[in-house]
Length: 119
Image (tube, rainbow, N blue to C red):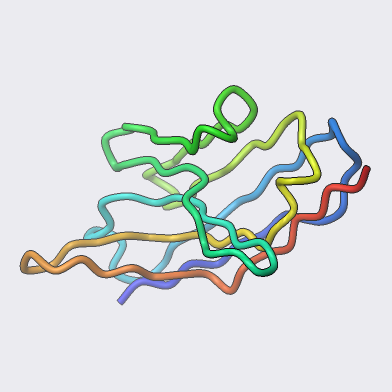
C-alpha cells in the first residue's frame, strides 16, 4: 500500500510561479513512477508530468518549457515547479504514485490541491 500527500498550490497571477510537492509513504519500493495530473471543472483528469524511478520525464505539450518535474528517490518526494502560469492552468492538481505488482498497475492518488491563476 502506498499513500501520497501533496502540498503547495494556491492563488497566483498570470505569469507567476508555484511549486507543488508530493511525498509518498508506505511500500515505496514498488513505485515505478510518480507524477502530477490535473482536473479543471467540467473536464477530464489529464496528465501534466511524470517521472520514473530512473528519471525519465514526460510532459503534456501544454506545459512543456514552463513546468519542471523533479524527484528525490531517497526522500520519496516529487516536485513540480510551475512557471509562466496561465489561466488555463487553473485546476485541481493530483499527485500520483504508480506501481506494478504481478503485472497489474496500481495507482495511488493524493487528495488534490487547488491551483488558481488569475488574470
